[in-house]
Amino acid sequence: MIQRVPLRLAFTHIPRQVWAGGYNYQSNLFAALSQFRPGELTPVLFAGNGDDDADLSALAEIPGVEVVRSAAFESRAGLAAALALGLDWKAAVVFRAQRIDAVFETARFFGWRLPYPAVAWFPDLQHRKLPELFPRSSRWRRELGFRLQIASRRTIMLSSESALRDFRKYYPRARNDTSMVRFATQPSTAYLSANPAEVIAQYQLPERYFYLPNQFYRHKNHQVVVDALTILMQRGFDVVVCASGSTEDRRGRGYFEHVMSQVRNRGLEKRFLHLGMIPAPHVYALLRASLALINPSRFEGWSTTVEEAKSFGVPMILSDLDVHREQTAGEARYFGTDDPFTLADHLMRTSRACEVSIVRSLVPHQEHRVEAFATDFTNTVQRAVRC
Image (cartoon, rainbow, N blue to C red):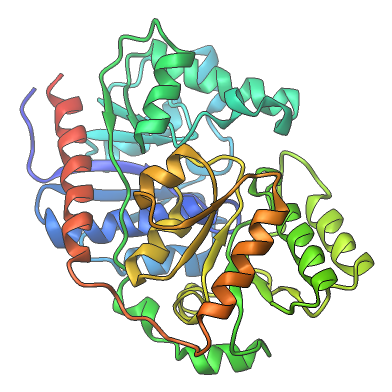
């Protein structure tokens, strides 16, 4: 195959409201490619006509990124054709019109007859390790998508050694080319424009707080934080956890309402504060000024929030997952996913150790990790095109 430079690589838009981590992943990837691999890949982002203008405008401002709107990319448009005919032909027509060279598939299958090299990103295999957290239809839909991508000989991209081990465990007969690409982030200056003191005042937060910026998916495990706060209240020790993120979990309705009812029933309204979906600059402002990041998740492929905390040197209190230890090289405090007592101890010790509020800046040499991310991703795509 004659390889055009730069390669025009198709992405499909991930709405921030649906999956903030996926949206941030693409945003950081596009910025990293622009900075460290200019002229090698052109990200062409395909979105539906009804997708959020603000989401897309922020991505379009990244140098080198092109945004294309089409009805072919509305929600599940084209899935039936991809399954029945082997090709989402409406999407393929748009790809051809935009002179696409390769496709990056994220939670979308374009068919085994797709006439382009394709890299399929498996962010994690949560549906295999924690099937009880998925409705049966959702679990089998995800599994079908993964198996179709494997059978279609996609290059499979995973985000960690932990995810790669899971892939080999659950799909031992897969002979696909696999690649591990660890995500790293270096937030743009636009995301650092908000003054942390002003943001804290806007949301009426105390100066000292812990930050939990996870969407309210059941596996994100907010409940253990509520339990830890209950323990601390019983000990007479006061800490505040500020949470932000979407309250929608399409796999299981009612989780947010359940967590917040526990907060009210236990009298924790002043200790567990939920801000909802907030602008990205506010997320970074709150992260930089927090006592520590909390991520109590039961499962991660490669945590975006952990990467963001690492980029500022923010202390971290994390669930004791293999991938969390892989990401942090042991430089965090860890607790079991069902162990609120250890989490409570960590919150106490961290709070006592940080008597003065600190606003952190980007750590030095962060660009080396981001450059490796961009290089590994580019090499994965170029290898898929050559095969």
